[in-house]
Image (cartoon, rainbow, N blue to C red):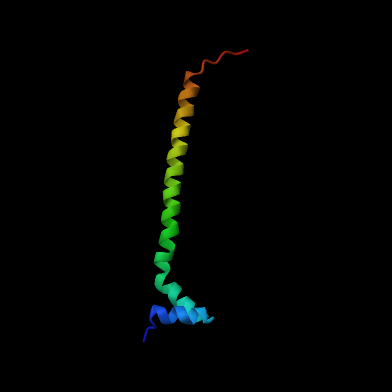
Length: 69
């Protein structure tokens, strides 16, 4: 018989490592999904910002007239 979450939480608070492992395994997908989603979102925006900066710099370089000294 599976323990309820409340029972597992109570046992975890009492120091039962196996109860914690049971909770972790039960919710591991949700536990990982949140930070992974956050990181992916931040990476997406960071890549977009980097791409915009690169394109702006590339346009500026094309507009600069090079005159050798």
